[in-house]
Length: 387
Image 1 (cartoon, one colour):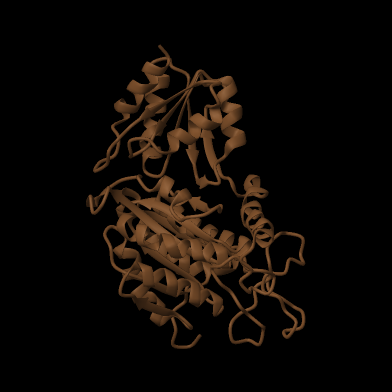
Image 2 (cartoon, rainbow, N blue to C red):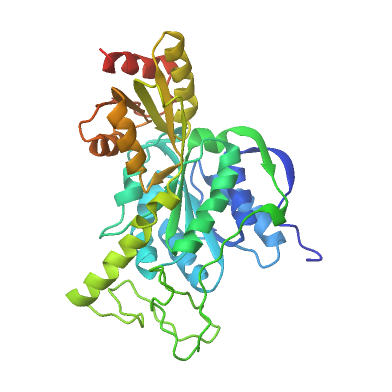
């Protein structure tokens, strides 16, 4: 390592969420970053451009656009590198087709979306949470995705590492759905020693390189072992429906075998992947559900409600996709209502409504973007839902 910087900056730091995302990626083993500058995610790329060239094996490339950036991630990953990019709304839209390609090719990589107000170019410098449904359904076809939502710079670091681990474990692109407020917020971030950071790596083949089948399932997990380009394995991968060799097999029989596997490797492990935070749920007559920066305001709304004698509970999505259906269903059965606070005109609220299934009232505390909620705005909806 002589002449190179350490990828893990162990210690206590005062840094923004964006910078913490970059440091989390480096700590997780990311050595390839391809991106295109876009507010409010540019600081992630800037940090990577400073740090990666000084780290052994690190490569930073500024691409001509987000379409090329996403393609570069996939190629780097098949070459054996842990890869990531960062973007915001308009760039996220451009990445959607190749996100689907990554899902189909089962390519580990991480995409950090620092959300801003939309639609279109919208509010480049101001906050939004308007890409949550795009994160789930943005690319075409049937697939499952994993998306995490940090609510602090510390979680930007921690959850970026978790995003890489999940991506490697399940061989799927993983989304870090942060937002402008968290991305530009400065707080203390504690980075542990490298040996204390859990790092997972993709399943690797151990058999004969000449007889290796890129998409053969031999480990009982539904996740194929991943050979790397240039190390001697027979490799073929494509966006077309493909067989175990990775060769195109455009027929219903292969589709009916392949697509359910791509979907079920996430669905069957949803309970392991889902993560959330809850407070005061046991006696709650109403629960405020939120994520990202909005969750920080929602906590104040819960305190204000309790001071007024309203038994309010707090529920935060840490992993938004897959959605924690089982837990929300349990909560819906024993509470009068769930208020969803999010910086959009209604996205995750519809998922809550679907899962609640009429067992309780569900209401939205909307916010079209550009600023965070005031606690009183959420409290007003809480009072209305209890009438």
